[in-house]
Amino acid sequence: MSILNRLRLRSHLDDAAIAAIWTDGTLDGRRPSHPHLGVCTACRTRFALFSECLEELRENAAAEADALFPAERLAAQHAQIFRRIEASERPARVIAFPRFPAPLTSRSSHAARWIAAAAAAGLIVGVGVGQVMDLRHIGAAAPAHLQARLTPRPPTPGSGGAPSMTSTSSGDEAFLSALDASLSRPSVPELRAMDEFTPRAGEQPR
Amino acid sequence: MTGAQAAGLPGREADGAAASAVKAMQAEGRFAEARDRYAELVGRHQRRAVRIALHYMRDAAEADEAVQDAFVKAYSHLDSFREELPFEVWFTRILINGCLDRIKARTRRARWFAPMPEGPGGQQDFAERTAGRGPSPEDQLLARERRVVLTRALAKLPERQRSVFMLSHYEGCTSREVSAMTGLNESTVRVHLFRAIRKLRILLAETTGTASSMEKRRVNP
Image (cartoon, rainbow over all chains, first blue to last red; front, side):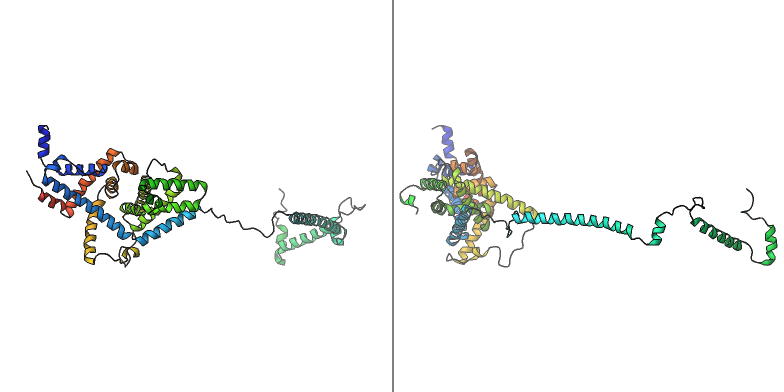
């Protein structure tokens, strides 16, 4: 054994060395061992205390889990797991789309469609014919005064082609002129002579 | 005891045989038989799964759901299970991934939603408050205090160190198994475990004085 190894064996193990020994032992699944632990009682005691502390930690964790999950709760969990598995294996239920009592595409629906189209066509034709008939009726049975207004009179031989209504309108024109003149002239007799002498704007030559 | 165990097969071989049988039954469409056989596997690993999930989630209800999800997922994906890997390792990986997903979701929820006020009955739900035939109230109180201290110390560890410590120390997994379960390198597993126990020792010394008492017993040559 070399001097260095002898010195190592004689010096005490520090915390890191103890942790390393414990780690190797735990991970390799074997009993932790180190040459110094075999010869030094103090370090062996320290290592034992360290292992005990960690063992207590493990036991406490297990006790905590067991207290929170007693056998009844585990049984309930077991049952729930298998309920879920069974539900996942069951084929998915397909909900049928709601159906009409009679199918939409049937022979009777074709007939109904033809009937509706014929009725619409009949209505259109009826309205059109009605319009035409109404127009003819208006043309045939219009009142006499309307007829006279609408239809032009044939020209009379003496009138020179002018409509007879012209004479009526000229009479009206004379009447209106007289009315206008009477209104525009002063109605006071004393002033009438003076008015005669005064030229009017409408009579003045341009 | 399961049929395979009764026949003298070790636990892992029995697991492998049961998993293969369930897989074959599923392929043949014998679902009722497959469920019955799978029940053996669930019964064998349920308690261990609950411990692992509880360790990750720190909440009984969430751990319960995580374990259920993991078993249902393992059953529905059993066709991807390879016989060369122990069922325990394969299943634990599913469970751990599920727990980590839940923790992520919980963190997101905590970021966006205000916490619910606690009920008048205290923090625990009814199932957790049910009285049992156990140790005396004083012992329970002491044990609870000790557990609280240890749990706090463990909770202070980084997530990877905590996982490695829990799997290797609580569940007795080897570095190879921990590596397969967590996806970490074997040497990384060793480093994480080493750091975890060093840190734990310091944390426990701060809270309980365990390490200081150990230091007192230390004898210099």
